[in-house]
Image 1 (cartoon, rainbow, N blue to C red):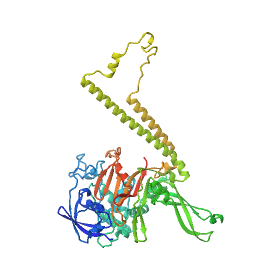
Image 2 (image 1 turned 90 degrees about the horizontal axis):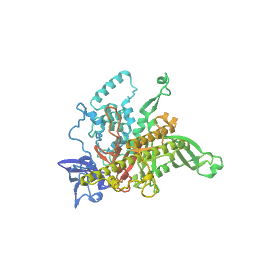
Image 3 (image 1 turned 135 degrees about the vertical axis):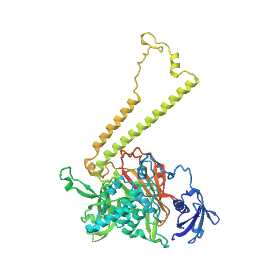
Image 4 (image 1 turned 180 degrees about the vertical axis):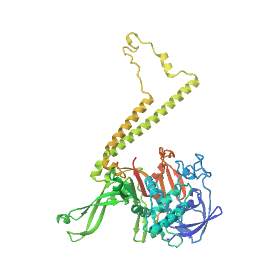
Length: 587
């Protein structure tokens, strides 16, 4: 059923909303949240017979185009999980500019305004922005042109003028990479919700599928975030190049070559084996065909037996293909098995939840719950050669991490015991009592001659000298440092020289794109990106992370705890489902 344009009145304002009657009422409430800022649990939407509830079936309301809803409610003022934009500019240093404040560690990152069913794009851009090397390379990017020198000069002058007005993307509508560069630069200089209009124009120019109109011809249609991700990454793969020097000799600059940024940091390689399933083909001498493929993401295939991400990835590494057999001289079924021979620094995983439903002639969504942890071990998906290089490094990383966790627990336990001991002493001093040591000294009998105690022949032991807290701490730090040095020696030199490859087989979750709703053509996309540690503007280094995440709901940005990510496994029409993951090389 097509979306229905409706009007929602709230606080004297009128909001035009596209309501999907097949979606849960909760999705409609989230649409209102994105434009009013009123949380769904604080919304009171009046409908015939009472208030709109989360489980209300919208199709039973008989809503027609132009229907007007009355909504009451105000945003929560002291929400623990929502960080409001400051009313006044925070100044850490008197001469700090707005852009410097936006780039500081304590700043709230900029959201992106919804320009009409563009939540799919906003979520994709926020997740892609979690790759720091991408922002660095985009800042250096200069679009090439096939036009003549005079035309280039005029174009450069025009682009410079537009960039000064914050409209750099307008002058490069045919260059998606330049538009992304300008957008990320503008986002880095503000904490307000930013309209990605110029990038959206560039995307729709390069890929007209994203300019498709809604079925009711009222605005643009909802799109798939994974398709947007794939098209943007494919363009970056063609356009964004980085220079690599083959050797550190005098002619390195002249002999340096260019490779794609995507191929270095986000692309992996498969070794494949294609073999016919029929025994007759083997008897006739048909040999398995070996090959290599490049992948930009791993697919997690979801079926009735898939409960965890690992199961879905394994299912995606083996597929059935029907093709002509040269020995059987007819079509036969082949099995293609893939194993990873190169792991990129940043790994993208796609949960294949949408499929084409022939009976309904539209995309449908698989609602099954699929769990996932914050750390992903992909060693088992690799070739035997790569496993041999990754496994020792992975095991040492886990050993070091366990040692650090034990050290941290011991430190906390020691502080807790010291605090309890101090409280005990303070309490005894307050009550005027003697300490436990003084009591035991009063009761103790003097030792007998010959060094024997009153117990009958036992010799008193000499005083034991215990290590100080500082000495114990220094020994622990030295032990961990030695283990880290050993870890460096375990890393294969070829993986180190690669620069953009994963060397341990471990990945840490950094970004998640989620979709809420039962239909592929409606619902709502949001993104979660792990919060980085505070940045020192002087040194550029970042401090320790606090484990929290940023939740990007269009232009609304909230800080949520890490355990919130565990709830995104799906399992119902009102749940949020992981749609796309991006994980970084485990540090």
